[in-house]
Image (cartoon, rainbow, N blue to C red; front, side):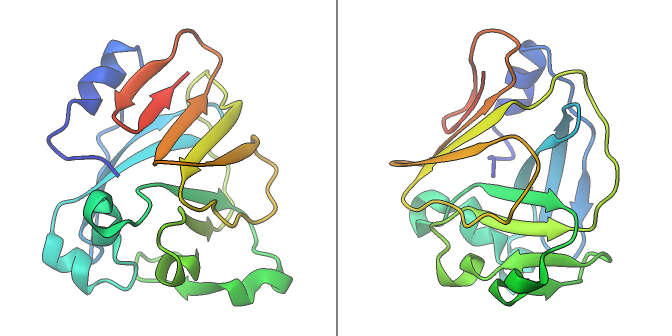
Length: 179
């Protein structure tokens, strides 16, 4: 989650990253912009309609106001099929027109990063590959099995570092670094 009026877009551009124009999520009260990596992407998300976000079952308004609510401002989205043995840990959200499995920690333990699973489709973007992810927070995410880069959790204040191996670390927001 980012502040809509923050300087994150300028920082990304200054570091050589290209942002798409993004889109609004009807009924969810959020809007996004994305940076494409080779086989993944970084979605920068903010609340643009607080009433709509509060009325939506995902309640991303709580994550947007993470400093006041204690909810994690981070989320991990995975593409593919959710294993039948873990489906009971998720609930099905279909308000955006595609089936999205949302981990129940979104409601039960919002201090953990949001974890969700979308249908698989091939997405290829920029030239840089995401090598690893380090997320710090009060509680680690409960991740499904995945084939992507390793995600390492540490206990502490909210921070996210994406390792791309393309140069010096670039601080994008107070809690997001690309390295």
